[in-house]
Length: 344
Image 1 (cartoon, rainbow, N blue to C red):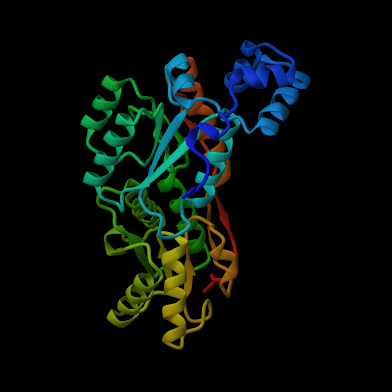
Image 2 (image 1 turned 180 degrees about the horizontal axis):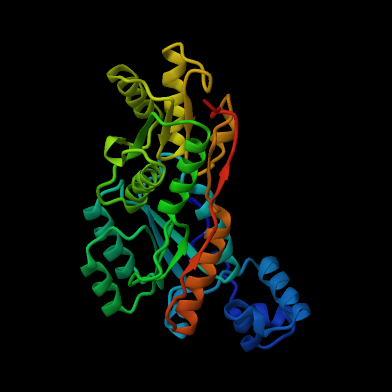
């Protein structure tokens, strides 16, 4: 009984030589089009790409990696995939990497330092040419390990020009201070806060410090701020809001560590029959899409996610290909003044 063609009947996959013949160029030119496209003129590059598509040719990744002594993959370890906090920045990061011929591998640590360390070692073992990490809170021994392995590392979603690894990001502390000072000038002096967990999360910790900085600078007691720390989750934000409003005295404003928590707080206010911002004002941080979907629209801090992702990709590729130290860059995060806050 014949169940189909044998392996010998199947056409062999197209080769580099086949592409060269189809495009009427040398195999060396085809190789340059694949590995170093900037070194080839646009008309030739287009002809080679057309031949690759027509023949269904797939470059030999292993051979390319051996020749270039790198895998053209970059790893990114983010704290969570459960909401869209990191999505926009990672999308821009991936798009820019693709333009340079790199593939992105993403994993999530679930805010666990042991999981992140394991993922770092796994990505290095798999030959990642560089790593993107979020924030600086990790064992210094990890940076020693990456240095010994000669794997470039770049940090995002925060900024520290004096840190061991370069960063492309924004100042969490200064940004939250600016938002807090703005609402204090609007008359808010009874301030509460719902934060993400601050242990091993320098972004959350710096945002708490930013609120306290603004309170101290404006004659309020920073020690009176007792943030409730919760997971970045809508329901957790709602439950934290209930606790704040029930323990008294009620604040005039609730500052939230990110937009997901803030939307939860807004839901909690609605369930308690409170109007935002007439009964209580609420702010977020990040300016992800949900901040403009809720009603009222959320006052928040705009994080330049796409700019950060694009610049981080360019910098990390430069560190890999030019074998140089990275250069940190501070980006602006601006206040988005919307309807969830009113003067008192």
